Length: 180
Image 1 (tube, rainbow, N blue to C red):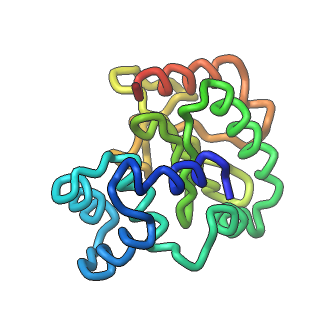
Image 2: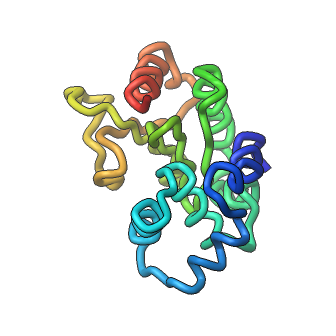
């Protein structure tokens, strides 16, 4: 399991007043059709911060899969994309110890206090990197969010590790700083 995620789970009782298992029971008693509805419920009804609420809901839905299993499943048949994914993680982890990775069924959210990036293997040959860069104009490379909708403001399509260059790293760093 990812160390940051495990630390978050370990800190959950102190930070939220309940363990992950206790939160899972609460969500089981209040089934929600959409992920966002469950997150909103935890935030508004129980005063849980967004990061913890998102993690609780994600781990409640994927109770049989560990975060590592979720990532492994995302890249089945797309193994050639794993070096790109790993390089993106190396870049964002260098920003600070407050970077959290939250794997979901089809993507990995990169969170500071708020999500600032989203890594999704979109096809067998492409990763879509979603970024939250409010107010930044789009370019040929820094496109509108496309399929990410409101989860991100922009999207960069990556087919090669070489595309993780200084420009892309600066966009990631800018999104990281905006997520304070």
